[in-house]
Image 1: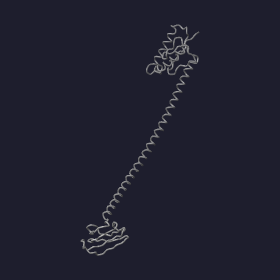
Image 2 (image 1 turned 90 degrees about the horizontal axis):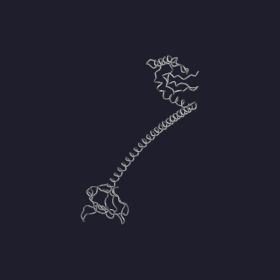
Image 3 (image 1 turned 60 degrees about the horizontal axis):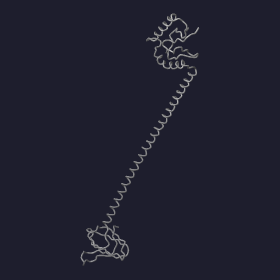
Length: 252
C-alpha cells in the first residue's frame, strides 16, 4: 500500500505530491513534530478515518504553539524560507545532485567569508603597524625639532657674543684713536691730550720732540730729543709739548 508524506502543521507545507528523498532529514530549526505525529500515512486512507488522527495531531501542534509549550512557531518561520527553497528544488525535479550543488555553493560562500575575514585581519594588522610607524616618525620629528631649537639657541648666543666682542673692539679702537697724538704739533697736556706714556715708531727723516716753557714763538726749550728710531715719552698735566716729523704717538 502506498504511503505519503504527512508534515506536521508547524513545518512548512511541501509542494503537492512531494516525497522526501531516502536520506532526507528535516531542518532542526522547524522544531520537533508533535508527540505521536505520523510523518507517513497510507495514501488511500479514507478522509473519514484520517479526520480524527489529523485533528488530534493539529490539536497537539496548537498546544505546542501556545505560550508555555515546548516550542513556538518562530523557529519554523525562520527556517520556512530555506525549507521552501530546498523542497521547491526537489519538487521541480531536484535530486541529490541539486542538494549537493547547493551545499557546494554554501561551502564556497563560507570559504569566501573566511578569506575576507583573513583579509580583514591582515588589513587591521597592517593598519596597526602603520600607526606604530607614524608614532615613531612623530617622535623622531619631535626629537629633531628639539635639537634644531637647541642649535638655533646656540647660534643666537654665539651671534650675541660676537656682537658684544665687536662692540668691545670698536670701543677699544675708538679709545685708542681718541688717545692717539699726531706726529706734528704743539699740545697742552691735560687740555689737548691726556697725560700718560706714549710711544712712536719714529719718522722717515728723524723724529723730534721738545718740552717748551710757553706757547709763543719766543718760548724756550726745556728739553728735547731727535731720533731716527722709536721714541717714548712721559707727559704730565700742564706740560707744553711739541712733536715734529714723527709718526703718530700712541699710549705705551
